[in-house]
Length: 331
Image 1 (cartoon, one colour):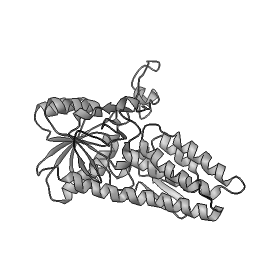
Image 2 (image 1 turned 90 degrees about the vertical axis):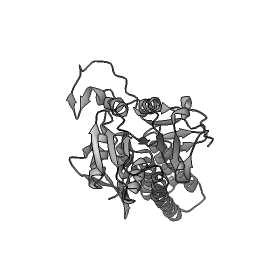
Image 3 (image 1 turned 60 degrees about the vertical axis):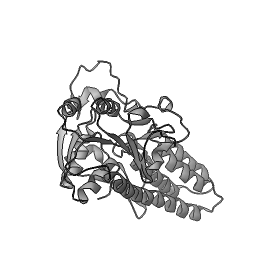
Image 4 (image 1 turned 180 degrees about the horizontal axis):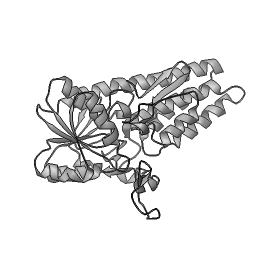
């Protein structure tokens, strides 16, 4: 199963907001549907957002025509670039699509080249996921107990995943592993998505609430922590799903290895350190409600950042498709 794919002249993606209760696929020929799906987290995960955005531009090219073909493509790129601000993969993918769009090509050739570039971005992500898994599996011993947060599997990428690709690779090698999955409030990506993926792969998984992680570490039930990443700065500071930083602090205190897993497209060399990363803040009702059911006073103020930043000194290693990177980081 793929979280997204190109079918003829349309894009098909799974609506992740409906999982694990329903497996609903959306088929569209409209880049605005892709943009809205990213905003609403129907499509989520930094690498997958990049793939989806590239396909969105390819869709836009099919409807654009002379004499404003070029401006229509740039409009689509601009719209997609505002879908989510933190995941750098989105901007890397759109920059590549923009380079193609700005070549002096006739309309039909431009459409073909834009689609080829989008398909290439997707294929590269598939290959990167495989290499990431292969590299990271070296760090997992037999009988390991692994803690993880958010969703980092095929639902978050164009391929098999990032942190979950590592876990899957270790599982294929015959290693007996146990995964503890933090539920990941407020949108419960680990509870809804990761447990669903791991159970499909017949990997031993136990769901916990986010505030149980410290107790697990104190009881010496965790051997290592693996998480994904949405943006990695030049010095190794990393933005990832809110709650990642707290796991890094806990792991450091308990002397547990803390690994970040991401494709190199997640590295933003233009940003020196984590304080410069823009952090998306989302709707208050994501915290006030669970699946549309109120759990707090409707007017209570809410702070709802989607990401936090883990300082490089708390990260044992960063795993990419090029290998295992250890501090001091200099990307």
